[in-house]
Length: 289
Image 1: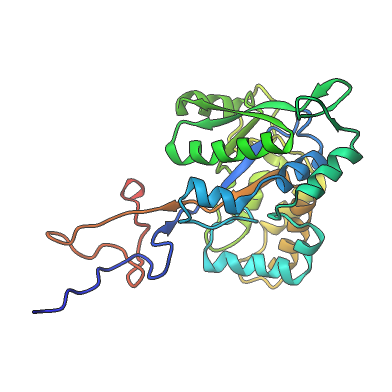
Image 2 (image 1 turned 90 degrees about the vertical axis):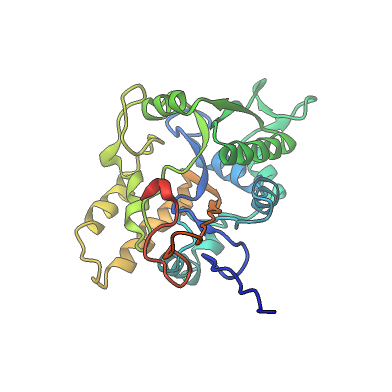
């Protein structure tokens, strides 16, 4: 009998899926308390077990994320550049460390109340973690909210109709959400990082087209504006990246959580030449073509 051939795959090693260019983040309106405090943002980041997010929300078929970039070769170079420069040692984004999270809360004057939540002056940190009602985003939000609850931050997941969420996102009336709004870069780092440029900053209540986080850092934005003037082959690109990325890691206005995947099947019975790992001529999601 003839041997049954292995089907073409977009990828040939687990996870057998295509990485979406928009990885998933925990995001905030950082003009609002307590999210305007980078230390609180770091405590929240330390309290997130990204490996558990991947295991539960993605069934193990994804990767934790410690950067705002998709897991693409051209962008992995930038993450390694930051690692080699010691930035992830100095700013351990992506690390799950409940002791470090608890120390930050204690240093900020918070103590755990009888209800198990950190509080200061009789007030606990409580917020709705909004997720647009897409199954993947909802699943990520459920795990993150439960992890923060377990740590002592009263985060409650709230699902929103995507249209309602979109209006709130643009107007800045949502405080915390699971999102992908730093999406942009696929082979260079500028596009994603430039979404945080204060050039795009507008007040809460005014529609924003980007910088939905209302983050305002003049030093970072000056670097981004100057960097955008460089040609792609300019040797100063890496220097500009490291300068901007150190500020991003230090301030952590957006918390990376996990890579997003798309599992897409094609049938070759009638049509062939679908994109695959060997013929990756276009993104495989048909709704993007």
